[in-house]
Image (cartoon, rainbow, N blue to C red; front, side, top):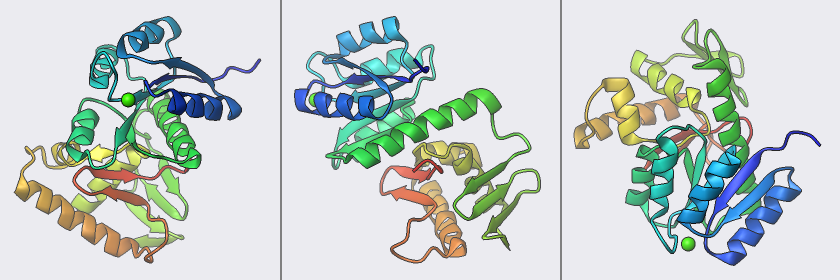
Length: 236
Ligand code: CA
């Protein structure tokens, strides 16, 4: 039997568990299910899964408790399941080390894309670090890290130093939602406030303009209002 990825689902709603484990199993993953935070912790230590899909509203404890205990020693990717409109909650979990979140209700294609992308980003980080001397490719976008140059369909697009630094940061974490404060800290080494968020938004608007992505097409960068930005990965 090939070496399957093991995915731990921690969710108390039975129908979501059934849907998720069937979906993951048919797509070549091994799924194990926990219905509470306590059970999640137990299964986590006995199976050491490759990825965790974590619901926040669990009967015994806040799902964040499980994330916290995983992050004490491990970088295992964690995808958080959250309800619509809980922006503050999403930011809190991302800043605690969650890799991404999926808003309920979600479709199978979206979930599988996030799973692939989180597994890939994790593998990449473990094997190669920050793309040393490498090149990032996504559709017709290419970032050459050595030369600090960006190309779209083989034509160079000029970015300012700051814009380039933001692009490089997001691409190094492609597939991961990065909160405003994580980006601001990495780029400007500043605390997050209205001024720094504004500065980030202005730079992002310029980046978008230079990308010139036509409205209605899939952009390279996904913006989640009130949360942060995520560079798509080539797995989605
Ligand atoms: Ca729940």
